[in-house]
Image 1 (cartoon, rainbow, N blue to C red):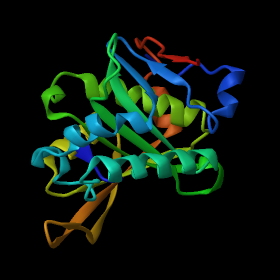
Image 2 (image 1 turned 60 degrees about the vertical axis):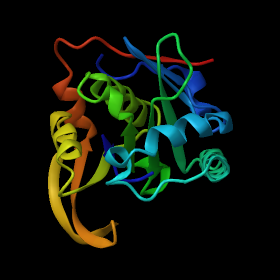
Image 3 (image 1 turned 90 degrees about the vertical axis):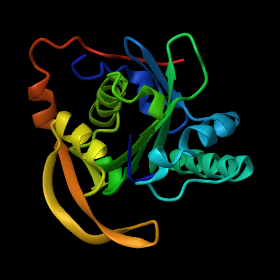
Image 4 (image 1 turned 135 degrees about the horizontal axis):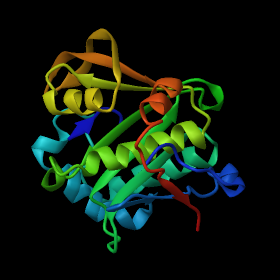
Length: 213
């Protein structure tokens, strides 16, 4: 499951104000999302290499050194307050099985764009929904985002269904906006607005935790 870039809401403490220096750890029932590290490059390369994962995202780095450079750039963007990049791990394990990216579209993250990729072995397990809820909680509760946008290729049925299941609203079609396997294809623009997201989780949801180390 992948979409292009490459509880209730999160409870936020004062220490999360310095997220650009170090991302707060996000814990769910089965997953832990933590800041990306250069040492994650081999595991992330193995995760995105399969064609079913990489088909609908911008071409990922193809070697460990190039993935290390990608990670270094991501951390540099985080240091400026322009982006955040989380890896997904399972509780009790530190090896990455997925990746979530957030970048600001408007200053101060009032509008953000996100993209994600999850190892195909974990598709259909419910892990994506758990991770996505944690990341949205971080975007709305820590970054102060008002809306979070995503782009998904029209042909990416799994990615489109995943976004719709989260409550993302289709706002338009971007014609020939994504180069996929040498062909320009249409993308669907989705958005999740903070008020809608919080309202949808106002009843019967257990709050997720933002844990800072």
